[in-house]
Image 1 (tube, rainbow, N blue to C red):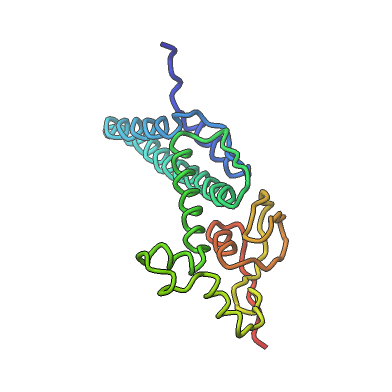
Image 2 (cartoon, rainbow, N blue to C red):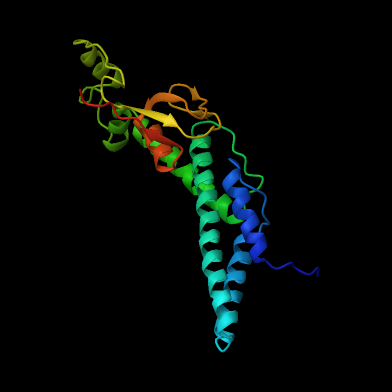
Amino acid sequence: MAKRFEMTYEDLMSIYRQESKLQTLSKVSPDFYVRVANYLDAIEQRCSEDKTRADISGMLLSQLKTAKEKSSGIYEIRMRKIALMAMNTAFGAEPRLDNATPEEHEAFKIIKDFFIDHRKKTMTPECEEKKSEKPAVSKEAEPSCQEEEAQVQEEPRPAKSDSENGNMILIRVLEDLPTFAGADKNYQLMKEDVVSLPKNIANILLRNNKAIEIKASNQ
């Protein structure tokens, strides 16, 4: 069996810098998270063994603290990328998972399935929900979807736009984003773009630090 190269402090710092710089996932080994965990465990063990040497112990403790911070940073940055790709894929975009680890593939599927399921539940017409919930009855006793729609159409009202309903948020984009599909169109946002987006999309970008909200000042 080929000898495995162990994770080093320099490796961890290099991956952190690369991950912070790229918009896509940087290339890491499939067992990256296992190697990081083994590396941190090894440093902790050395710290406990070298307590008699204050100079060595202090240096190792400092290295351990930095390594833990950077490994957590790598995980958080990669998970943000995974979450954004999963949302975009649920809306119709193509994912780029060539550099994802098995753990990240699993997280991607869970998040993507959540968005797909949530969209189905949110966008299912009320009439269809009633059909699935109510027991079967005679056609004379229960009006059809067409009859319900006809009753609604008897009193037509002008439809309000999302902006009139307060369902849009004005944001400024902080970095170039891959194209993703919304409910009514595809979005291709670039750094410094100022746009109004539906709340559900805008909130996801805001939570992932991809944009900041621009609030109108009160006159």
